[in-house]
Image 1 (cartoon, helix red, strand yellow):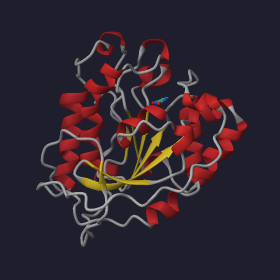
Image 2 (tube, helix red, strand yellow):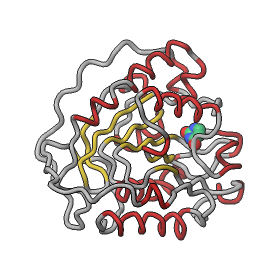
Image 3 (cartoon, helix red, strand yellow):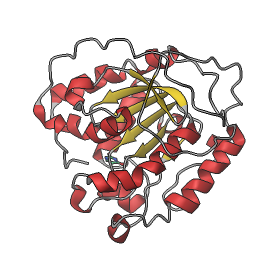
Length: 271
Ligand code: URA
């Protein structure tokens, strides 16, 4: 399937999860359009069908006229950790795989630094098609494309969703706060009908610009194993029933760290 790097090996690697624990005290994320989510094997088959029949052939916006191909997503369709970037760049558009350019190489290196490979995680973007010249995603494009991402989150069922940069962070948190303010601060939310831990990170392209930002990104990355360990599988995964209700606001966030240099808040062309 063009644009999809799922493999049979990854698809059937993990056993069905049991004894999931219901977590409380979550705030709802943005309203999401999703359908019922079946359990593991059916869920993965549905993800592959959705990618093939809905995403890879999508013509919902004008980016379909300028793209080479749709960049659906790649990695483990049953991953515990999902990374969400902004949009395909030149190399992703050519190869049909997310994060294969300069920032993708850095992402791979950062993953290796915490003992993970690209095959251990699922990687997708807010937009599935390259904006011409790597310009910023337009608000209308994000609105049109976001159902694809939300459906991916609902079907992959990650416990930890790492947003890379401003666009993914603002979309999935439902908050306007910029990445310089919120990076490294995990936020329990509800996505795809399930509790997930949202973990905003600088976009790797930003870290390619500034050494200080790379150090910050490495430090934020280093907390991923600890966050994952503190986020056990939950009882709501795969449930096709109603969404769990928020029962309490999230714990007060710690004060944001000193703001790192301004370029991270801008869309960077170094994809
Ligand atoms: N930047 C992104 O946000 N996504 C990609 O796939 C590549 C670069």
